[in-house]
Length: 259
Ligand SMILES: Nc1ncnc2c1ncn2[C@@H]1O[C@H](COP(=O)(O)OP(=O)(O)OP(=O)(O)O)[C@@H](O)[C@H]1O
Ligand SMILES: [Mg+2]
Image (cartoon, rainbow, N blue to C red; front, side, top):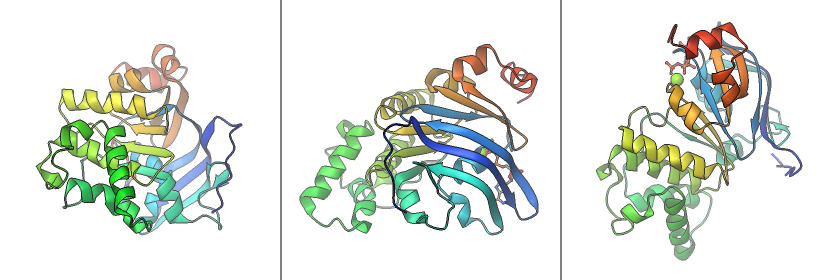
């Protein structure tokens, strides 16, 4: 895929009439929404409404699911990532994913970071060292681990492991970061660190985050999408969604009528 850089647009991605099926079951219905550059977009909604399905559709993670079929467009820099010219590996390089439970590779802290760059052909030790430091600094983990880069990643705390996974995603120079409930396995302090990090990362990257935590969406997201039964019920600026929801379903959800 040739990535046309279009600095004139504030859209990192644009989703148009996206429908998705798992076998015969339709999980997403005609979803259209913008993902604005250098902003945080939150996906909220009750369990099973399609948040993970939608965020996974943003970098073709659903390709790995047997029987999954997609119709519609997910444009990244103006090009459909599902189009015939799209290169899935490039899509997943530019649009990285961080998952619900921290999943470092079973190797050292350093090797977790250099794994991707090495696959991309970087062999020079100095370059790799630089990537390790830069990625860990950007993920706000460097100071905590710089003296033990050769220890096993699993020895880190849950919050540190999640920041390591963010550093790993950053090591291959992405543009968009997708986070599916990145703090749901973490304690409040570790959650706060990831929230602060997401806000900081949005200065350089575009962030999409799935969250069950409505306070979290309000604290960090610029835009919020409320999903319900596979449909995008409402999309808008976070402040509008929470203070002046237009849709009755959004209103009921944020007021805890259902969860
Ligand atoms: N791999 C899969 N194969 C078949 N059906 C799936 C698969 N993943 C999700 N689904 C179905 O798609 C629908 C949406 O699920 P999804 O996981 O996207 O919801 P969610 O909003 O992320 O839920 P939660 O808040 O519980 O994480 C559900 O009906 C679910 O059963
Ligand atoms: Mg989910």
